[in-house]
Length: 361
Image (tube, rainbow, N blue to C red; front, side, top):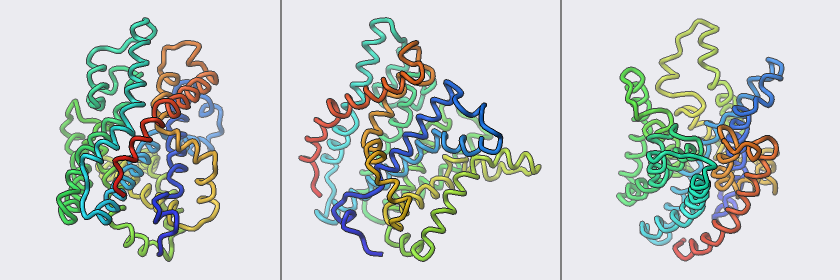
């Protein structure tokens, strides 16, 4: 399957659309937790669909798979063009992309705490500032979403180093990281460790690395999927829908499905991540039908562009927030959208201009 013009120029289509869906899943989940908007009011037949479309954990893992795929693809292209990978430039680019908006958000939180609007304890501040939030993500609400950012930052720190050791080692290391996660899940299930839970890198690194493996074997996977690509796409969506209800299905049918659920998880487990990978490939390289056109609409493309800022700021105004009137629905949506727009145009975008100076490709 030949690469299209957008791909060869590295403007991968559909990625922002997928990011938009990911962030909307997170938003819907937080809104539902806080306000019980629809779930209690829906007919029983529709509740499973609403639960699926408000699965924030699925949304986060979509981000993870996308990140792993995109970062690895960029590294591969740089290596092909320059015969090497500049770790210095990579880390500078990641810093310019992630740090300014994140630390600006923390600065606003600090001002709110100094003015007695919110309270965050010292331990929580420490993990928030040092990108180790997944160790105590539950200590406060306002920085708790930093668990996913911490996982991504640790991945960005580790994976490029592994990448520079060559094709054989990078692939072996990737498969090891994917295979070790189910083992960790089983061990921790039977022998609990207080600092290892579903929000730590030890149980979620496979999502990012599955994205990496898809980038490594992209051409082979496209050839494998090509003849029945649409079928694989729909099958992946069905699996993603059904897999979240496995515990309930097992209970109703009197089946013990722990041997699947414990090691491979639900919508943010290994099987789900593989399905997300298939959806990712189809979204970029598949048929240019309704799904492709939907993901590349101006609305979803724009939401995806703002997804990082939206993810940061929704936390301040939704679900668990103590900002009273500012966190009341639907006014809170206006607030976090306004904050995200300010963050993107006034904080992120100026720093992104410097990012191009450290791009070899």
